[in-house]
Image (cartoon, rainbow, N blue to C red; front, side):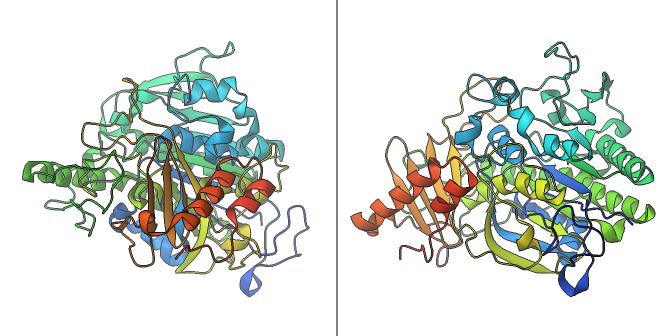
Length: 503
C-alpha cells in the first residue's frame, strides 16, 4: 500500500522515517521499531497565519497530534513577517538569499518573488517533477491577486502546482473574497458555508480523496488566513471562550532591562488597552477553531481512505504574535520568542509519540525536508537541510546549533496588512541568531541584545553589555557569517558551533 506523509506546520516541525532513502524498493529500510518506510509518501502541510504558541491549548485536534507525534521546541521562522517567512519556507533559503524582505514591492511580495524567478525553485516544482500531484489552498504570498493577469495568465498559477485554490489580500476577513479554482475565479459571499477556512477544509478533503483513489503521491499545502487580524472566526465559533484572557506571562506589561531603542521608554499598558488585548485574544482563540476542525477532518478523511497509518501530519505557522508582552499592543516583527518561535508538530508512522525535540530548526529546513520525502532532486542551492533524521530520533553529528532571523524595518507601506498599529512595535533593521540557550540581536543602527534562555526564558534581562568586548566580538563574527552564507554547506559551517553559550 502506498504510504502518505502528512506534514502539519503551525508551531512545530515535520518528520520522516530514519534510514529512509529515496528510490529504494519496498521491503527495504525500516524506521524505529521496524516500521516499514514508504518510497514516495504523500505530504500534507498546514501553515497557519500569525498563529502563536499560546493558542495551541485551544486546539484539541492539534494537541492530539502532539500526543501522537513530535513537537519541536526550538523551531523558529526566518523573519516574523509573512512574506519573507513564506518565501523561505517555499525555497529553503534565508531572506538574504531569496531577497524577499518585505510584503510588497520594491523589496518583497509576490511580484518580486515572481520577477526573481524564485517560483521555479520551490519544493512544489521539485515534487511535481518527481511525479507528485501538488495543491496549494488558501494563502500564497502577500500582494498576489487572483484577478490579475501575470505572464498572460488570469488567474496566474505559478509553476509546480497541479491544483491552485488561492485567494488574495481580501481574504483576511474570512468572507467576501475571490478564490481560484485552477483556471477560473469564484467570488464567495457572506454565508456561513462561505467562511474561507471551511471552504478550504472541504476542498482539501476532496483533494485527498481524489489522490488516494488514483493512487497518486501528493503534496497538499493548506494555508488558512486565520488567526491573522482582524481575527475573523467562523460564525459557529464566535464567543467560544467567554472570559478568556491572554496569558499573563512574566513578560506581560513589562519591559526588559536595557531594552533596544525602539522599545525603550514604553509606558505600561492601560486597563483599557489590556481589556482590548484580552478581547482580541478571545477572537484569536475563536478563529483557530476552524483550523483545528480542519485538522480533525483531514485525519478522518485519511482514515476513511485507508491511509491514516500511512500519513505524517506537520503543523506550523509563518510567524508568531505578541499581545501585551513587553508592553506592546498586538503585533509581530520583533526577535522575541513570542514572534519568532512557532509550533512545529509532526506525527506519523515510526515517529515517536509524545516527544519534544529540542533540536534547533528553522523555516529554511522545510523545503529540503519535503524534497527528501519525495525523493526529489533539489532544484536549487538551499541554506537549510533535511530534518528527516530528527523526526525519527537520530541526531546528525553536525546539526545546526544556531538559527538566523533577519528583519528589514521599519514596516511603513500603507497597504500592507502587517502595517503595525501604533504601540505594537516596529523595529528597525536587525539580524539575530537563536540557539537552544540564547538569543542574540544586532541592530543595523546600533544596539545589541543577549538573553540567556536557560535562566531567562521570557527574555527579560538583556545582559549583552555584561559579556565583555571579546565575547561580543565573537558573537558579531558568528552572526555576520550566518547572515552572509549562501548554501547549505556554507551555512552549516556558520550555524554549527559546539558549546556556543557565551556564558
